[in-house]
Length: 500
Ligand code: G6P
Image (cartoon, rainbow, N blue to C red; front, side):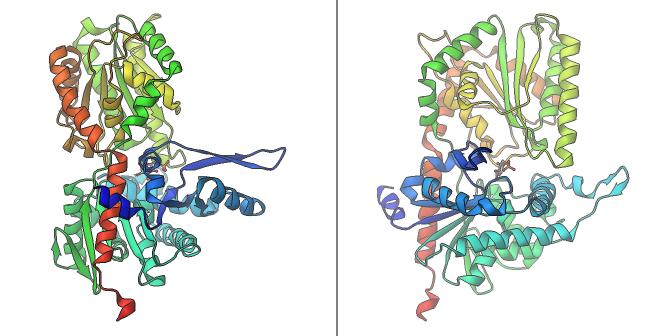
């Protein structure tokens, strides 16, 4: 492993993802732009390995930057963050990001193709080729940004469903480029994938890569059978040949940075917050949910199970509270707006039915919270409920495990908490210490809540031991390093056409 990481460091890795790991704003008085590192899945995952990988980032800033500010923004990001912005107009973002990426690919990859075909009040929704054109147009702009800095020794690592067209764009420009692509979501069964009207060109574009990576064997297998059916090619578990180019395939389960969480747990401000929260919830058990407000996370399913639990177990009323963080996400996509309304409705109903002046069964926090606050809540919670209907991996389940530490002198934690985890999250394949549930089965989730609340300390310790062993070894940085090492290997072994 030592050798692999040394050799990885020799060449630059260009990380191309829809979102840059920084966000910022313009000071209205001075006209200066100011940026800060943001947190979030991929960002956190790659932060730990940035330097070792000699990485430069390419991506969108999450907002439209006025023409006259672009030079300043470009220069500042490169100097301070080694990042290159891709400027997208709001109009293009609406079609490429809200439309094709998040209203076509995202639901489809999570086994929910309905939103785009459902007939809605007043409008029949259908597959719209305008969105597909915009998707490719945006991917071309990402390719332009890569082209502006690319040198032949670079490794280009493309991320996620927003940029499936990019490998082909890059290959057409640079025959010898080293190109890897990693999918952070599930890849669905070919029975679902082949619904997509543009299923063929999208697969062909990906096959221009040298290496494709997935979180689990199932996702990789689904991808191969989609290729076999849609493109009528022969596949092997290691990859396939298409248009005289061999493309390798691998499984690389992502992880988190457990040391980062351990460090946050040492901060005095976090100790104070844990003590405060423990006091607030004294005499009660705390269930915790932390999700982006996304329909794939199954928040209504979780709330319905809690409602059933409080109905069935009156002895627990007043004695258990769900803290549910719902971080607003993709708020311009109608399906997300509908979800938000539904969650508000359910929270109101449960609190109205089982709450009183002193007690709210659900504390719903519909905003993003600081890392310190998050780690404090993770630490003091008794049970973490992950009820995703589909989820590429689900890093919340790992973060909860990493934060379950004894805090001597801060509070008397009665042993580790319990993870209740949907079997439809990628992480369920590795976290055998969790109580695994089918979120569609409300009775089963209700029962799991009861079981989690009443497990003996010895049983919880055995489970936590298994969980934390996995989470502390399979980290974000080992994930990133192993992907890049594999990319390097497959590229070293490909025929060097330039010399033919
Ligand atoms: C998922 C995707 C990421 C994305 C994240 C947040 O984890 O796989 O690519 O960045 O959600 O979503 P957003 O649309 O805000 O970038």
